[in-house]
Length: 293
Picture 1: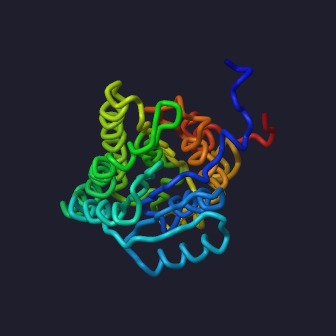
Picture 2: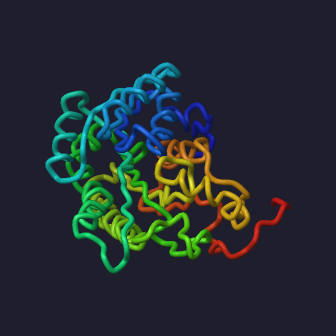
Picture 3: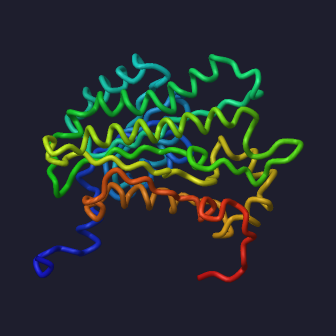
């Protein structure tokens, strides 16, 4: 069997036949993923609320090529918004090989005075949108797949879903805004939601054609609009307790997403993968050493 297998990198990591949707794809982690796919020849759709940001990112990525990026304005705050995006995607393509559920939001407010509207917004974007987007695009994700090359659903969560320590916390605040616990709950719920979806998608009756992975792409600290304020103020503290000695880079995130979408990971499904530089392993407790292994 091994003697006839094609184990060349060019074969294992060929994205020229991929059709990808990245929600929340105009900025941050979604933009990193979209660029990674386009630079490797895929056709990519990015979706977000703000057309100006979508157009700017689309133009920038298309100038790099060789793949192609298109944008769709969409607000996934409710089922109607998810259904609208699904409908538009089905107008533009008859198949998807990868769905990256990256839309997410945070909301800061006092623990004992947290508005119900904030809670509902967090749950809608961080939990409900994952379910309705995956269900809505199920038929497109099934088309043309088989057990050797399944389609992929990659849900982007936060380390906040499994990690409660904020090394920057102090009397005057920290990287985590007040009310951060509610944000954590939504991603913990998102993980449970993804687990249920995994068992639904990967049943034998589906011929293992859709594989779902949770990147709990569970991200650690990556530069983005959501984290910039904290990184600027607490960078020294973050790096002191970060085993790798740095925050995440686009190559870290895009590289992982590409691997999880490739033939090299076709036998993986239902996994929770942490990309946090080892911070969860140490609980932010151990000071970084200068030596690397």
